[in-house]
Length: 99
Length: 442
Image 1 (cartoon, rainbow over the protein chains, first blue to last red):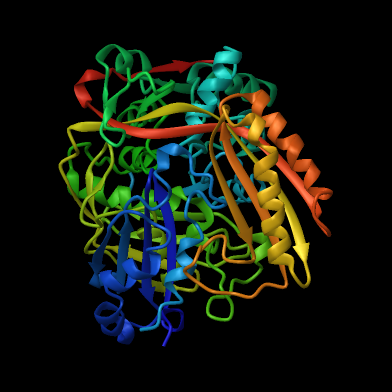
Image 2: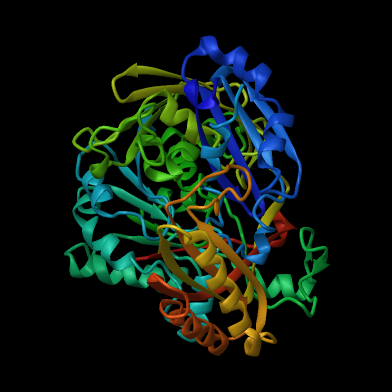
């Protein structure tokens, strides 16, 4: 099952850090998401795009996870030459992870 | 003092759509409208405009915003924004002129000064932790330094009955925290309530994010009348509940998911969201749909505000130039690669001016690199560079135009040139800056 089938996501930037948050549509899927969408799975998926670490935060009351990707945008200060320097498109990649 | 306040969002950054903001202001549903006009690099760019023209450096839409919101202000509505950018005084004068021209000569306009800390940062040689150096480092060309400032000066101005507040680098949520605390009489050291007000501000600061923007992903997520998205507004009550809704005449939607996605947008640790006003705690929030297009958020909290203020230091990094070209059909990837190689060779005479380059093939995994595989029927080659001078950028763009000719079937060439602005954070003690306010009476 892809994350996209049970959850929605959004990404944004602060300097060189990008965060991707993920929420399940139905609370009954919360434990599946929490147990299977691990820090390691996300780090592995974004490895070609980021050079820093991935930290996961849980917000059970919202049935959501927040992944903070460090050094995710070619060091924010260097004014990334990427097509998407803000990482706005990063939100769509997490939805493709098989859980 | 009232029991609740309704406040609308009118902008999430310079260049947001104005018509839906005007529609919400004119709906009669809100007493306050707040406009965030500053993304991280906006202020550094505004500062560079001000260097060239001392009367510039504020939000370019400011006159138009004031004119279009004049009927709202005339009915007693209040408008708050970080419209001042690098030049709050000139911005406020523009607002005064626009109000006068629209028959609102008696409306008071408030200015907030003091976020521009460039002089101080240069004098104290501020440390830049992410750069591992200080601002005096010879490799840096520092063009701006602005401290993120909080809601206190906004409250001070609203108490003096101003109709429009023009600030510089007011923190995004503080634009909302100010009017909420003013209307509900919440104290600026009531950390729990400042946390609640910051939750409301955070939901609204990104404009239509809470009401259907950056959301549609059919068939999983669909948005009614997406071409006509409306801005959200929130009603915050003294019992610390936040009810989020939207302009009912507009398209879009407000549901649990649109609100939740915005709650953690650009947030790192949900238990510790730092603003100049409070260390907000989003970790216990709950969001539930209480009516169609209406979501009630509870559980916001907060702890003592940080002692250090974040300063965003803007760096002039030269120029960013791009050239793009499309190829289709069999061999398109190979032809795009050949064009990239050829282009690279033609750039050799410019090599001393080129600071970095990047090649991407859109349609063949440009955004996600090797993360996803694909077999494209067409690709768009994009070549980007950061160069030292405007002249070098123009020479690069000129070579870009030759992409029409060197390899078979190259179409739709475009080039762009823009300033390359970097931003990096530093931190200064809150007591080391002095914020002042002034009320202009047209």
